[in-house]
Image 1 (cartoon, one colour):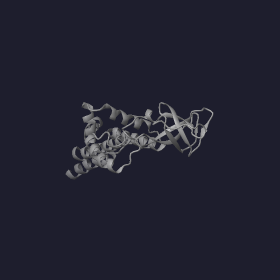
Image 2 (image 1 turned 90 degrees about the vertical axis):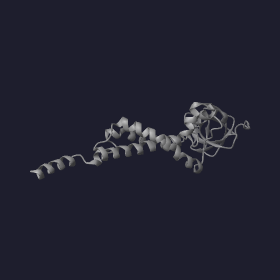
Image 3 (image 1 turned 180 degrees about the vertical axis):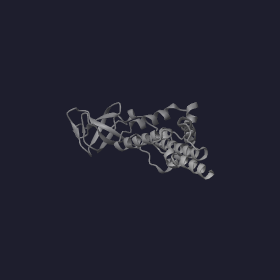
Image 4 (image 1 turned 30 degrees about the vertical axis):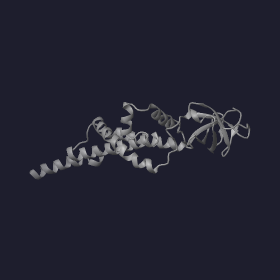
Length: 227
């Protein structure tokens, strides 16, 4: 009789394997799955070359100066690496810590935690973990952006088209150096709506609208850079 009861209990346990309860797509793991998806989207944005937001955030962090939020940002590792790298690191650690918390709870308690409780615990742990991670990253990663300047200071400087052909409504990726010699990758369209700028050509950036710069090929107009 006891053997039958024990077999029944064992059968009930086998109906829901632990691997199913800690699946990435399970409801209690959705915050961590979402973080991984967002991290993948950030990586895609970096590959495409839309880095203006990163530069704007870095410049704003530098311009704020000393204040109560600056100390907190420093403890979290903000400013040590480009913002997009910092955010991707935070999302990755948040997801890994959250999945680890859920797996630990499942093994210890027999069931995972509520997703928002686990998300809160993972967020608290992810901030100091990110600060620890970005410190060595800051020493080995080259920085394409600098916190010393904003994007508007790039207007009036020369840029070289590195990827694609710039047409009106279809920008190409270009590299421009700020006054400190730091490279920035920006999206450029021709200032002349009927013109085109081919890969490898050098342009003078004459204006900026949101995240897009407009340039004049230097062979068309003999203009020198400002500064």
